Length: 110
Image (cartoon, rainbow, N blue to C red):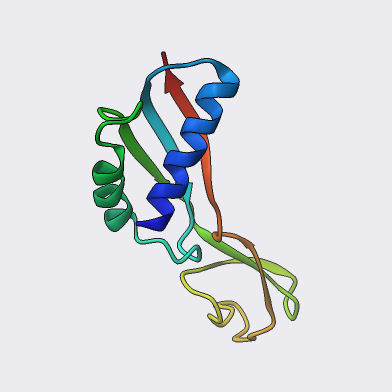
């Protein structure tokens, strides 16, 4: 719920700055390592958006893959959760490079 409320605060702040009065569509990038459950966020956003400039807005979630750099085999590998092992060499010396994002990619406004 707090993430949906934070998203609404960003929309309201930007509405003042960018001079728009209605949000039609929000594209939100969410990675699997961000600790955000997309279905829960969709549900909470609908509740938080009632009576606001985003009341009938569509929240479209773009799910990004988790990626990490393996320091042992010098490969970029896909991961689904933190502390996964490298599927190439089995090492746990991975540095997350993608998948922990939670950001607004694009807005459609009036």
